[in-house]
Length: 251
Image (cartoon, rainbow, N blue to C red; front, side, top):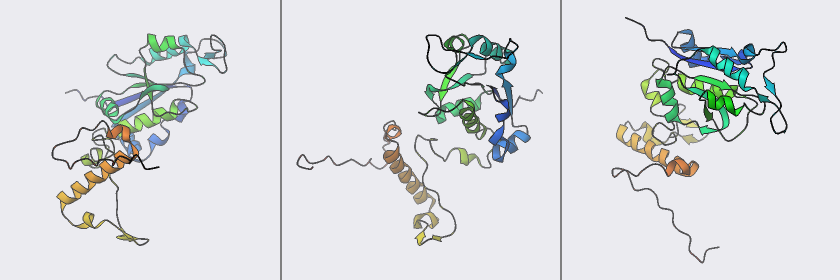
């Protein structure tokens, strides 16, 4: 019987020494050492063809900075030899936002190839020719795609079978059901005069579940109205709070 291959992340970067980095410690590190997943960091510069190992050039049309060359990056992607079943991702601030749903999909597959850009970006022609899916981890700009790639890989690895201690850990957290996670508490019972909410120590699991759901809903509505708007009301749930419209005479 053939043993299935472990989940694998192949990273194309100008700085392979950045990997595994923080992925080599804690849960991800133990899982890596235990063979539950693998990481391969490949140097894009190894595919350069001139004696200076050049990987970039000035942007066509002018402008500041440099752009990764299409021929060099395409050669690096081809040299990685990944199969068509593996997603090809490019970490990019203009990409689609990474969601927990997409993380789950990636974790359930064989593992992606991840391209880490640098400078002003990469030649659009290699994005099109090699079918790169642009992915963003937020509306801000980093020096390169490596930190974003580390975040994506960590989000996937923690969902792999055997990585987390309890299966419930992956289902009772932020975004697992479209809501932000409820507040967490632990000992001491009293901290700087503030006790743990009494309901959490009541032993009534149904009431605890209801309290946690209500807290998640309140946090999501207050902090992430974009997520809250996407959650359909359920008949069994309490009615959503209605915001009281301002009186026209109010300032």
